[in-house]
Length: 45
Image (cartoon, rainbow, N blue to C red):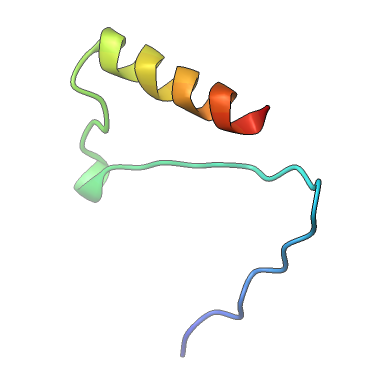
């Protein structure tokens, strides 16, 4: 059974999680991780 659709509200804050398959790393290195966090910060504003 599929999970229910997520409710979305304009201007709401959402918690983001990211996990690799079989708990593998999701970043190549610290530079990659910092770039991803910069992208999230850019999208947040």
